[in-house]
Length: 532
Image (cartoon, rainbow, N blue to C red; front, side, top):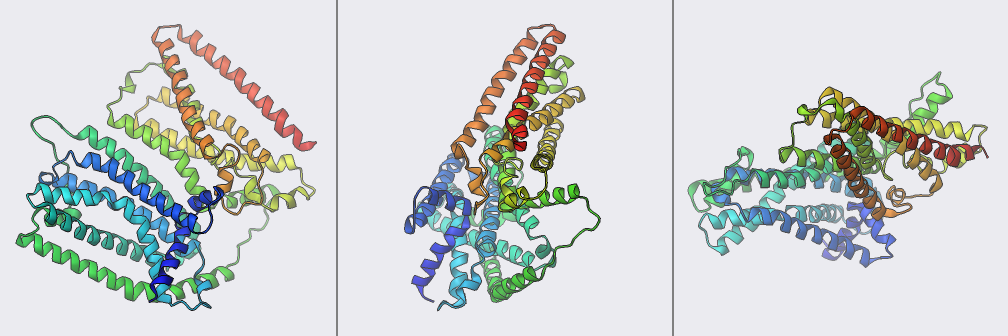
């Protein structure tokens, strides 16, 4: 194999690992090698951040005496590494769609796949680096010298990385060979990317939970329940030169070798055939058409099809669920007040809290915020038809709005169940979420029309319209900050024993006035102008 060719192929495949990030780098004016350099720097920075954040937590724990905590961290990073592997493999092997382009070039198949696997591996390693600290601390605290601890940590890290990468590859490529995946490729891809997001957020919450569960008293630290699947790694680092430790190490090496052989003989040889078959299958696929559908049903079906973009789904889930998950995790792990003790006079507070929650969940990356631009060139075609543009966009709006209500309302119900809201507080909370979602959907839908982009090539171009990523962060945290102030002031007023009928009634009247004003402004500035 030609090492120079592999090196260049790795650089090419690094562009596919995270298309959204690559696009953002290019928008900054970087070209050629500067793009690759920026991508590598981002992954190096991610590795440093992970080392600092998780390493600071690990240093305070004596893992040699706490196998439960050892296996807990291994489970955490196994999930993070697995989720990163999924998105990287899908992007590099499936979304790049470049395997056929290498056929006329003087490049061996082995070089192509080695470069792709190495590119995927390079993106996983930064997120697993804290395991080096974990292995080193366990060995060092067990009484071994620094040199032995370092060598052992590196060896076990390589074994763990190889096991994780091989297992993940076998699962993913095995799944992609099934007919079910070929029929529902977008759905499977979206689920995998969504899982990647959920696990990444869970890592942040795990640190918070660990810090709250550690007992720093003189009696020591209470251990966690151990995950038996990772205990062999603990035995190797804790009893490296014992019979048990050496046998366990040999078993791990044997399992690693078997997985590598399975990858070599069962996956790599059939990759070109698999992608060729997929291409022919895609070309031969015919869309099923339903008969006796009204124009309204056809347009509704068309608009739902527009939303089946994996990157769009991932971005929506990320921006919609990260904040709620962090909020729930923080509240649950910090012993919140008992909401069962609250009285009906707090109903207005929970209605306002629902509206605030809707502003946090809905932003420029939501479904309804990009639904018009997703038409692309079809929008110009639809404008040329003898079809009312207002009626078309109203139907499109309600498709997006209902989906946003389903997402926000579902998360709201989950919060109410997890935090055990009384029923008389759950109902106004959900009502506030739905009403806030409707009002904000009107704003972001009209914004999409105002900043219409039907020539986009990457979905991330739609997310950065207008104020860009900084505007998105300002919106999310600004909504949280302002909303928190309003809720606190409302709670203070309730606690001051102001007449609940007058207080809640007055707040509802003001909300009604603001809502009507919002609706009139949207109607006059957007819907009415569509007929002009």
